Structure formats: structure tokens, C-alpha cells
Length: 212
Image (cartoon, rainbow, N blue to C red):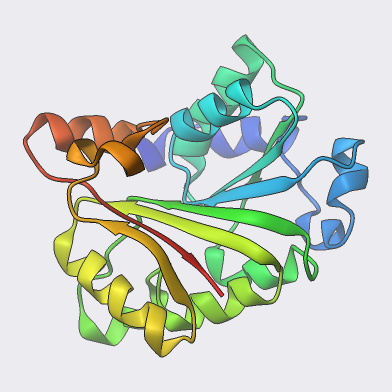
């Protein structure tokens, strides 16, 4: 059975206090939702939430929002929160294409994209999270000095993403094609579920950090 088909997942999500249900109404109100003035960072396509949960655990003075469209993987993140709740971590179940309608100008200071769907067919390029179309969406709510961090083991997707940076008018702050053997960029690295799996298979992990 595929994770996205777990029965009852949507019911659990609908009742969870860790999920922001009226997320379009949250635009411009994230500090109010968290109840503090701490920075807000997001991960788009967070999967089971291992990376974001660890980030929130290590950085209690930063607020995190995990965004995931598949109910059954989001369910796993909710279950982890229920086992050991963190006050600085919330979730949204939504399609990434609507992201600009959820956050207001300058509301987010960092965006994490980890092992995103490669959408390998050329006609689907605009659906890729590091595409120029998505970079344009991020531009509407990322702080002027904010950054995007992107990791993947998919070299074709990464090459595409690197090309899109310049085309979108962004700039490369740091880049590596072998993260785990790059001492500087790997310092403090938190691995995702996919990162653990693919690196154990010998796949090099690519990463960039970009800004405007």
C-alpha cells in the first residue's frame, strides 16, 4: 500500500491542532498564529517531516511551517508532533502552487526545498519547486535578505535548478555537487529520510543556497 493511500489520514489531519486549516486566512498573521515575533521558515514538500521536526527541535527561537500535499505522509509528521510536541512547528496540507496566497510580503526568512518531485517531463518544468515560476512565487513573500536552500540527489533536476537561478534573476550564494564530502556546506546538515536512503546507496547529494 502506498503511503498516500492510508485510510483515515485526512480525518486525522482535519482534527489536528498542529495543522493550520484556514491557511489562506493566515496570510500576514503568522507571528500572531505562533504567538511571538520569532522568524518564520518553511519547508515545501516536507514528506514525513523528519528534517523540519529536527530543525524546530534544535532552534526553539525560530518558527517552522511544513507544507505537504499528500495526506498520508503528513500524517506521519502529525504523529511525531503528538508524541513529542514542539510549540514552534505547524503544518499545512496544500498544493505548492498556491503558496503565494498563504504568506505575505517579507513574512518568511528562509525556504527549504528537500528532494522535491523532479517532474521529469519537459512540459512539466514549471511544476518543479526550484523553477523560475516558483522562484517568482517565493519572491512575493521571502524577506529581501532571505535565502532558499535546495537539496536533491537528482542531478538532472539540480542542473535544471542551477540554470533557473540566473534566469529568474537570483544569485548563487553557495553550491556543491557532493554535500557530504563538502566540509563547509555539510556543517550542521540535517538529513531527510530520502537523504539518508539515497546517500546510503552511494548517491552524491547536491545542494545550493540562493538569494536575490
